[in-house]
Length: 464
Image (cartoon, rainbow, N blue to C red; front, side, top):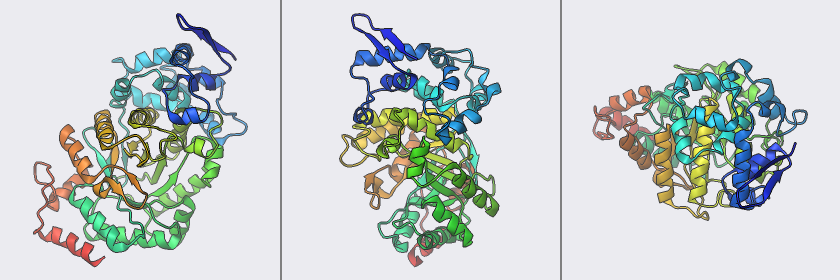
């Protein structure tokens, strides 16, 4: 089906199909230029947005952007769509939907009820018509609450993933970073390690290290070693203390094939983790990571712009009721997100789209050293996401991940955000921080190093 529109004073623009309209309507980013999908002029981008605003939401249920017959992600999206939930907005165009989202009718309760009725393509489409402040205003109304040993995503709370990576998985180095993070109030989202080597033996050793301190000090949090899902299944078969199963996911079957996964494998891992029954306040056992540009880098984007195909990954996540999902925005490099402006826009888009779909999104606010970005850009995005209500951010010693070689956010950055916006850790974790005398009664990070409990923590770190 052809789509066309005129922009006053310029030529008439015609697009051959819906996926081209979506790509041309996207804000400028280097990955779409690399793929040859971006609008060639601002006028062409405006024409595509005019067209997109008039397209009925229902069109996305009849015109699949990736063929149903050849892609299991498309089949998941179409087959799990909730027609009853969709009725609230089924008569709207994409432009009308934007206006509704910004209206008083779109209450937190209404948005939660609507989520199963939305497809990733509908959500990606409306985001392309929204300014940054629109993305923040709507995302702030979407609360997605999950639980395992604590409760994440509550209003007024901000979780932090404690990321104690080490280039050789040295136990003493990992333990020192865990101690550093806990003393700064980080670790309620998860204590999650990216292992230097992907093997069951390495994974089990790291899991036992975290489990030792967690049980010794009764820390109400969860652990994860971010190895491949098949490694986690093998570790569970060997009775390892697996809390969460991690996996990177993408928005097409071909991209997931490149990761060595499919939906059946994820379901097998989820059932294995559920059978361990290790949660106390909830049983959300999956942890997914995504990021714009992943499908294009695998040459598996199926002709979709990188923001639309990224949003399809959230449908995969949604199917497995995850505890955590985070977009590693900026990690993939300037070939896909060139500078601080593009990284900021992508971070806000990813957070908005995931929350609107009912996915518990956090963000790794980050960049690589060859991107046109710096820590001031990260400060800006971190603050915007805090206002938007992100479920969690990342805490790395000194904001410098010495294993993965990229710049993220530090424990101090998380302290700043909680202080500036009056946000608290997960309630169970905040109570533990007060018991340990790491937090004072006002919720400030003021650790008493001479308390007996703190001495226990220091002793554990020294012995590791």
